[in-house]
Image (cartoon, rainbow, N blue to C red):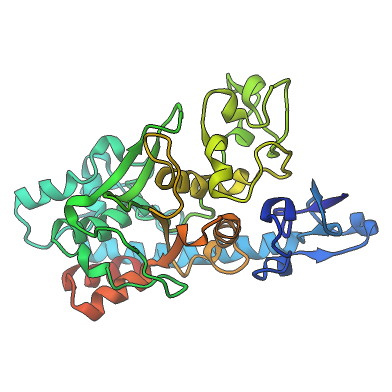
Length: 387
């Protein structure tokens, strides 16, 4: 086994993909095979062990992606500030730092945060209260007040579909690969919950699913918008100043570290992920994995476990799946982006790949237009988000 040097991430690592060729879905084209003299290149290296020749991801790839993200967010910001001017002419009342145009997206004042979701025009107070109750204030994310909030977008789209009885309109919608997006789920408003909590994976902080369709065939919905990734493991991000750094910090590999008995820092504190992972993924829990497959794919794996593992500990790959919803304009979810690669790696490692599906917000919203569903909502989504 040779020691390779991979930059942004270890692509084509057969330790992760367990038998899939490195070129399986085009991921290998994100890296270049170079001789060991490559140290003179402007590269960013992270040691890893691969069964393939040493590979690197060039620094210009990172810079190119960062530039695309800047342009993407800048265009959104221009739209947001125009939306602020047209929809909130008395902007001083509603926004925090209302003159920060060009620096950041508009951010609502704390007491006006609810206005960041799209509410039916002329809705009664009772209707507004019912809609807002779908996502209690205590469950709002830190940046819910920002127009970049994926949670506010999710409540605007999925929450309105549920409240007004149109979730069933998504039953015919297909995912990016042509499969039914919601599969065998019972697509009923009464089955839909936002920020649904999972309490049987041994987590100190319970998994909270952005959206969840309950029933015999559950579907977990992971909603992304302007994020640059799907969600990474927190342990490699611990800093020396953190109280649990010495005992729980991880270097991003699934190996025994810091005198721990097991290979996973989270397993050491009672989290059950690796008890179930080998039953759903082609990842072996009793051998080293470098890098750890959960490092960059953490949130997707966590969601898979939330639907694949039942409260009684039974595991099934046939009774539930996860849907990733993303903005198709976001470079992170286009080919080569961190979100795209996390999805591909996670899906490819699954024993049942249909447990993970994806679909863009644009596809959902266009489907609503085609079906004549909530025209007032799709009009507002076009104005605010350009979708």
